Structure formats: C-alpha cells, structure tokens
Image 1 (tube, rainbow over the protein chains, first blue to last red):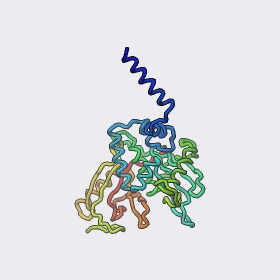
Image 2: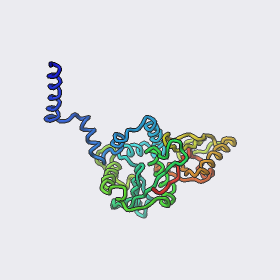
Image 3: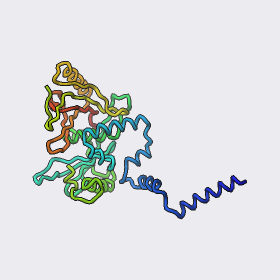
Image 4: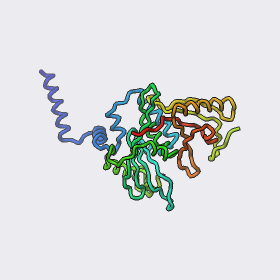
Length: 202
Length: 94
C-alpha cells in the first residue's frame, strides 16, 4: 500500500512539474528540432529514420569525403543547413546570376541569386545498379555527387534531370526559408551580423 | 618526378575512390602516375569504372580559394596535380 502511495506521489509530482514549470533545456531542444523542419532537418531526419550502425559509419565516411572536397566551411554549412549550395559563373557585374540548393536525396532547387526567386526543381538521382549495398548512396555522398556534377559538368547534369517548377516535390516555402538560412549562414556562420550574403558565398 | 600543385604542394600519388551505397567511399587504387607500373594500374582501374558507366570527377582548388570540380572521361584528362579522382553512379532523372 505504501508503494502505491509513493508511486502516485511521484506521478503527480511529474505531472505538476510539466504543468507549471518550464521544460528542461534538453527536452525543449528535441521538441524544437522536430517541430521546426527548417532548423536542423538532418537531425530531425535522423531521429525519424534511425540509421543502422553500418549506415552511420557510411555517413561518417561520406562526410569525410565531403570535407576533403568542399572544405571545413562547406561541411559545417551542410551539417547546419542540411544541404550544399553552388553558384553559376559570375556575370558582368561580378555576381553570380543563379545558384542551387543541393539537398540529399531530394531535387536540386535553382534560384535567381539576385532576387532570391525560386526557378526550378532539378529531379535527379544517382542510383548504383551494381552495388551489393543497395542503390542509395549515403546522404552526404548523394549531395556531394550533385555538387561535383554541377561544378564539373552542369550541362550534363541538366541533360539528365527532369526539370519541373518548384512545388512538385519541394515545398516552395521551405525552399524560401532555406534560402534565407543560407544567406544568414554565408553572412556569418557564427550567427553574428556581418556583411556578406549570397554573393559572397561563391 | 612529382608535379607541383598551384598551391605549392607536391602531389605524387593519386587515389581513385568510388562512392558506394552502404559503405561510403572505397579506395579502388592508389599510385604515382609518374611510375610506369603504377600509372598502368591507375589507367586500367580508371577505364574499368568508366566502362561500368560511372562518372568521374576531380575536385580542384582555384587560386582564389574557390572549390570547384572537373569531370573527366579519360585518365589523361586528370590534372597533373590532382590527388584523387572520385567515381560515382551516373545521374538519372528522378
């Protein structure tokens, strides 16, 4: 009987705690990440997908390859934003006319680098038909393959892609939020305000 | 004889790596293209990947610090100062 009363007291205490006191920081952090898909997509995805040990090891290796190609700043941006980015060649005024948001295993989104207007979705995949590990590359490898193809032979990638208006697979509002996040990140990855922006990102 | 990179580093070995589902990248071959035997193995490995339909990219670092890449279809297109070639499955419309 005493044990029952102790249990009821503990349960009542926990309920009162969550009803009247602020949630602990660690719990607010988890809820925030899940509730705000724009801020920490990759963490939210990892919570949802629950990668196996082998998949986590493959992702770790893929991120090592990524950092060797895009550099530490590029990897930091990928981890923080959940996507890579690339810009077209500079035009007469020295600024790129357009750019790309490069999501892993989702379409690439092209945008006007001056106005921020979304242009198209480039639906493209890199299925490995000969692999014994399935067809799907690790997320970081998929994003890096897109980055390499865009930077190395943009026309070849465009020739293979199914090009559709934004909104087919990517939520335009999310892409606009991601553009804002990219601009903020390229202005100052530490979060402090400074000059920079998309034009400086290339 | 090693080739100096635009940034002064001496690159004498080239790695050929392939992205693999479930594994991350895998080292296919590594060697000094200035040594005949090793160059032959690099060329043979390179050719096999291309015959399987893979795309090949070489990451580059420009003098401005901008990171770029070039796609290559023959081993002799690989820049002399490249330290690796990355193979990945060809793009297909999604």
